[in-house]
Image (tube, rainbow, N blue to C red; front, side, top):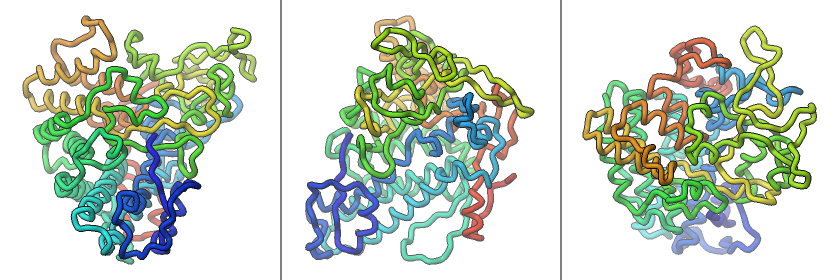
Length: 516
């Protein structure tokens, strides 16, 4: 992964930097006058670095929004394991669509983006008044900050819809709720205003992890793709989505020949990565603890790891069963089957006397009145998309690519089909991904593409990457029953999450989403 250097600045940035990652060999800038700071690339990175640290909140942690999305959709299933582990109500409520504003378990999904936005506003203000930065550099930096802020508003627009819009760091007034339409329009306006001010050197070591022109156009494509859901009054934006996708596809990104290049440790080499959350093995603060969150307690024996995982995040059986088992993304996404002791060659035995064989199906026991019961420790396919490095003893080195070029191909294909444009353009985009997923198997390529084909292809390509709920809502499948964990059609209110009650208690100007 790429490391950003966060340095000890004079007092006006002290609080920010102390909360970020530091290194023992860093250069100290405490003796440089504020007005002279920001004249080198290293100093500029030090100023803007903390906003990128916020992107670490985009991960598969037990209480983060990627996990929340997967549970609310049909990507993740955590009914609770024999012995009581992961039996908290928050996981069951997400699967059943019975969550409330006072649940609290997934409050970080709301709190983290808001804290990140506040940090963006603070650093924007500090850079804006800094006289040591040249005007061209300043405009580029300010555009980056607005871009990261727009990304966090995108997550809030997706999950909560109606949220405050805050851009003034100096304002002391409690912010009031804005409509989802206003939030949508704000994000699109911000992106259109900054897209041509951002750095255009994409897919390079220097631009990796930064909010670039490619990121802006990709996020615009996301906004346009979901326009009918997030801003129905404004109508569909399929042509605008296609245009944004074409802009990204004309840049220096490329689809990696090896799909796994996107997910290995030190995956910053991927030319497919557009926007990434950068992690460091053993780093401080929020890090990539996926291995801890998904692997069985005994899995390190079989996989050659030196950690003590928690046996948690598992795949919803229906999601896994949708795959063609000859698709490289099937075994590349899910840990399925027996885990063996390399010393004996025998399958490991769990503390409950069961062979450690990760099954796709989950068989619930002691089912309660709401239809949920515990499963055995070994049941459920585990996350296997980001490779676990042999000898791993801390957090993972793998970065998480928030946006990849493959997603842009899929967005364009969907917009083409929905707009009634030339279907061959969608076929070309989908088949580029299927050629990689089924190497040498031309019979797996499509001659025509339907919306159902695109829906499925998104599930194959983007498993675990945080888009399942968003896609299900757009394709009209999110509220449907999906036994055994969700046996009823959900109320429309569950298309949005509630504003956490604690946030409303702290600010009476906030309005709760309808139905909560």
